[in-house]
Length: 215
Image: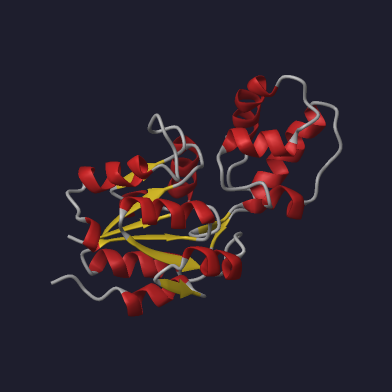
């Protein structure tokens, strides 16, 4: 069976408004002013700890922020979040074509599962690997290799789809195919020039032209 591993934020779901909303709720709780959505979006991609380090540099005890932020975010995971166009139909068609589907993200696994459950997509994915699932996180090759091993998939039959630098790095390190989405949060032109993904797509539905039915 062939395997497609998706990033989450900026690839399957447009989550930046909820991330910004919850970061600003925490900033307000701690007595700081708001940051713009654009600022906070630029901090996304390297996990919660890096997000908070960038979004709250003035806070004196960053090690205490994670629990505070997750407490806030878990109350409001899908206030503004929505799936990108054609995500639901594309995932369903890939499943019908006998592809194994998984998620590899630097978002906490529990929050990803809450959002998937909200959109009724939990059953679509064989595995969800978040930043806290394993001792290491993306772009460590072990994250992708864990999914390959767990699904008995081969490198030559595995594709990683994402919008960020970490997605391209982990694909290269794991020796699998790379597909860059140009509609997400990353600077797709810069990423494409630097990391040379095999495909660059403007809509997730283009995967259906790249990935034929599995015989």
